[in-house]
Length: 398
Image 1 (cartoon, rainbow, N blue to C red):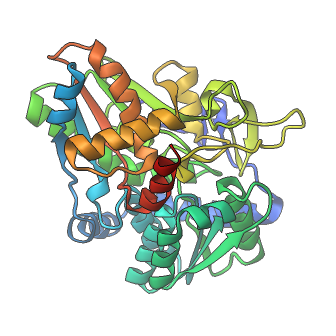
Image 2: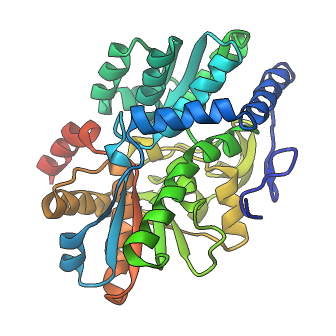
């Protein structure tokens, strides 16, 4: 652990975090915190978790030198951390297995969660099926339409999918709906939050389960290059994949760390989800963090071409890392993201998730200006099967 990774006893990273909850949920969430603290001190829990990562998920995921992309850009060597090759197709399975194991340990019978792009929902439904638990996933109506294939996958795995038609019909509204359902029935239910967001202990717990990404990437790049990378980067919505990668390098001050947000149709418009760039301090979904909000302090409607980044807030540890200057946060547009998606398809034979394509887009912007002896590591957080139909429509429109 480093000073960058520790929350205090109340779950604060600097001034961000905590647990801002209605009184009737304080006890259930505190129960999760206590159970998690006990579980991670239990070698048998950790052994089962690591065994599943190895034998069920297929870890470690490879670190791949994208040579053709590197040659095309003419600058730094670009490595991709291939989380897209995990079972279920994204990094989400890393923390979903941990949450499901914890739920079973607590005697819960049902998992409930929100999802945007559907990858968290698929991963949690997968973990529920594996461990014999019920599963209910709340998903914004817009995302149900965009990510139909993942809806079908969740239902095939035995999950109940609830389409949320209130508000902006996107990820924020799915979180609201799932929280409301959990509040009404928490005795036998475990809330499996899908990112490093929400009340303590979730930001720390999800980060801890995702830290395997950074641990592996650090060991792999040292083996391949004999040194640490110059820059690492990952897309940031709530920020779980990014926090997973970043956690392996936060103590290495010589490594530049970059989080890439969705600029959507431009940060000068209202059609974006660039929380770090345009947001301000506030409270949402049980945490103090940075968020996009209106004058009344209500979360704003946001937009991203990537459903998994379509969220008006960010994990509190990310907000803290921005404050102290350890991580730089930038944004790329929908158009830049589509160009990066297409480039990776055609140059490397990899169809990336639109979420991950944000990080690829930024790598494509910065690598040409770097030396050929320099190294960039990009977290390729998921594969793009879920996005193919939507992207085909977008490209036809172009």
